[in-house]
Image 1 (tube, rainbow, N blue to C red):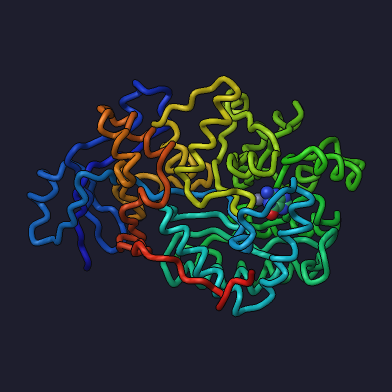
Image 2: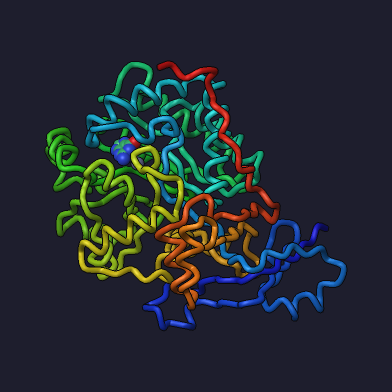
Length: 445
Ligand code: GUN
Ligand code: ZN
């Protein structure tokens, strides 16, 4: 039995704060503690109380830093770690010119393994302890993803993309091979350790109706798996989708008519929605996923978080690396704040940090396992330092409330603000402050 007591300032959410004064939505302790045993949070409370009971338990003192649940990223592309920051294109050209050629490389077991290590290092160092990932079309990429997740004992959700048209040679499956590979991956990984499988038709443009039927069969046969896809990210994408599926009432209807909408469905982007689509999302309980840095980077548009929330829809928030420009959920909240400002909404920092933790856990239906510091949940914890850069320290000298500190972290913070990360109770931050190793021998001029 391994026990550990973490001491520090402690913040955890019980529900979404309605505003900055909604004190019962969260617990904040100036001198708090977490008692962790075998990867599970056993107790959370004042340090004086917990330390009196936990005699002879080793203490790690994180004061004056802030402990909260690890961040959850509800949409990221594993094979795009070397696509991030590719210049000059909007969605369809960006996919064809940069992304698809890169994803072909994940046919290689060796490359997939190397990149899985690189991805997970980035996630952990940015404070992300759970992510929902698109792998490439190749089964080998999903095997590498889950192998690495298992090695690190992280709660991760992933799936190989189903794509059988409108993609280059070497990056297409068939409806049958996509089905067979997905079945094998679910059998090998879903529910094993902390792994979950997400059935992943990439988007309407790259799947034939026959493949959508196969995705529907997979969803019926595995109702405990999540489903993820992309929806209404870009105007040209929407026009092309309507040409490819002329009988669909709208873009969402492609997925709805194949029975792919439900509470376990994640709809990346969901920007340019029609009234019927919004009603259908509300009725089915599916979840749009807001990807702020990506939506700005590709010039895709402004996500209507307020409008969708007012319809009772619960939205995820995510990086969408590699169209997204940062692995940091802090930077994701930063850009998200600005997109909502452009639409007349000032997201409160308490709401922002709830969103990246318990909010995203609720979207995934995993709030009994992750997203808070509640006793009985898994000890995935981030320790935040709001003075991690000189500019932040300067600003912090004029800060005198928790909300202000959170806002500094959200607007100015990145991986440097992540002091430590616990995965299943074990300290896991990998980056000593040194130059990152190159994955290739030499950069050509
Ligand atoms: N739509 C289909 N595939 C992708 C992808 O890889 N990234 C983004 N941003 N949108 C997509
Ligand atoms: Zn995406």
